[in-house]
Length: 61
Image (cartoon, rainbow, N blue to C red; front, side, top):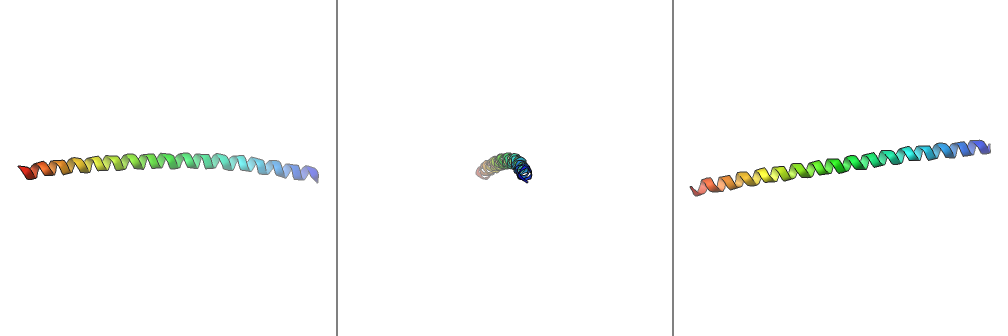
């Protein structure tokens, strides 16, 4: 009976290690997605600003 209890605790500890690894992967992926979103926003803003500046020059002519 005691062996069974220790075996169950070992299984639970192994499950927790796997869960922690999955959470670390999830957090890494979230960070990558956030960084990609930031780059896309910066690129879109730069393109918008360039188009705005071009439009301003065309209006002045």
